[in-house]
Image 1: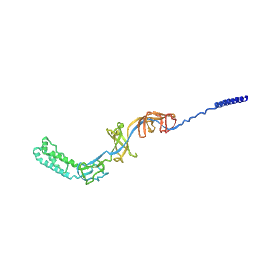
Image 2: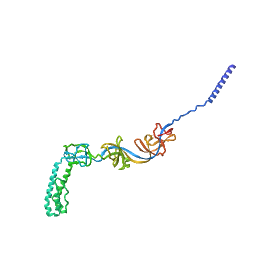
Image 3: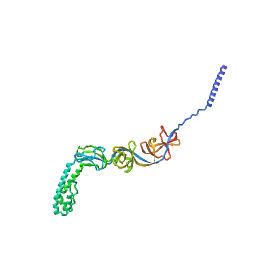
Image 4: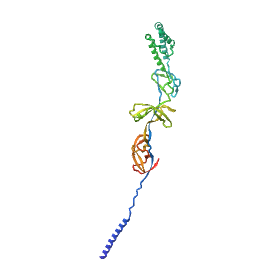
Length: 370
């Protein structure tokens, strides 16, 4: 019995000793210190330098000859001939005959009417000699130069009211103005080039029977062109006539300088744009050619041009302050195709020059100057 008690006491003492020994070892252990590695992202930066920059409005359109004439027949007859071949691409100098319509019948009718007037004037001379001697010399001079094959010259001015009433009573003025009307119509049988130019469209051939009102072709001057472009109404009040404009072909391999010559006051209800007309001259230009235009609408002061990809919600950018990204607000003045003009940052401020994925305010960065 005593032996069992001794064994039990020794067992309890061993357990208590083991417990204290474990507790001592636990107190001697030091908890491992955790380390958090902070990632630093390398970024490209640029330094803000505000300046005055132009706002260029990009637009485009097709060229049209400034001097352009649609040819229409005002009389009927057979297309007789032209000074040159009446074909597209043929050059005509000013005054050369583009198209002549047979006018023999009209010419004979005019000669007949002039002859009738000439007879009336000759029959009037005896009365003038006896009753209006002071008027006789200028009528005799007029009759002496009268030619039935030539256009009528203006009738002599009457010396007094008495002479005027006498001439009226002989129906001279009525015949005269009837002939002048026929002479004007007679001139319509020949169409001449009003300026040096090129026939761009020919719709009739020699020998064709032409009817009154029929379209005959198109004649243009190949030296001066107009480009009609549409400009948003928000910039219409900034544009002025006389403003120079840079123009480019489709491939931007050729540059031309144009000038704003007209600005329409009517707004297109669908697109809310205003037609602006630009005059341009230059080698290689053709009617119908597509050109792009850079219109300088105005100058914006104290702005900086930045890549549009760097804008956050179109009103903020990331500033690099020490080694941390900071989101700062800016005023977006104007959007271009790939860039934007912003205002609100002081000179010397460093901002991102290339966007980085997953950027956030407070992000640790290492600056690399672009």
